[in-house]
Amino acid sequence: AQSVTQLGSHVSVSEGALVLLRCNYSSSVPPYLFWYVQYPNQGLQLLLKYTSAATLVKGINGFEAEFKKSETSFHLTKPSAHMSDAAEYFCAVTVNTGNQFYFGTGTSLTVIP
Amino acid sequence: EADIYQTPRYLVIGTGKKITLECSQTMGHDKMYWYQQDPGMELHLIHYSYGVNSTEKGDLSSESTVSRIRTEHFPLTLESARPSHTSQYLCASSAGGGSYNEQFFGPGTRLTVL
Image 1 (spheres, each protein chain N blue to C red):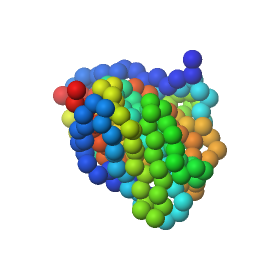
Image 2: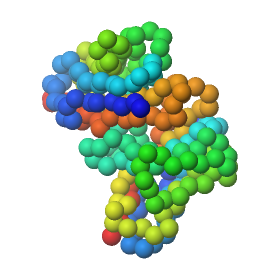
Image 3: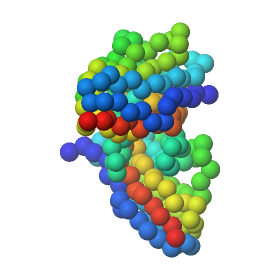
């Protein structure tokens, strides 16, 4: 079975500072990994995904994530936080032979002016 | 415009009532999903469908039922609502083929059962 762990349910950064949201996965077969963002009263929106091509994946809104197999990690980063980045972020994993996505518990990002 | 829709967005209802949460997508996706989302918790899959007349239960035990009579429509029904059903319900869809296809989410229905 697959799972993801998001370390830190709440992260606060200053506007302009680096954003780092952590995601570690567990999978016995090569995984596909995703980051989603959820704004208040909205559904989830895809930020980026890893599907076994390039290990450094660039997404929307200046976010990127790096797949590190040795560390079983897929951390999300953004060089400079904007106020509009304040939201809930979810990491998810699935596999080619699986039927389901498995989501983490989410990380709430606060951006301090 | 290709999108996924959920109605109602908010619903407050009394215990014992029958309710149906609607979900429709205009993207022609074969796969559709229902998740339950509570604060601080991971999304729990309660039902999914890989095509017309195909439905399966997810990991989370649920007293709800679903149907998939048309590709674009995947309603979720609670025969008798209870306060424990209070939650946010998210509908999603994805294209067929590989599991690497991302899921597209609707805006959600926030259900409160009194």
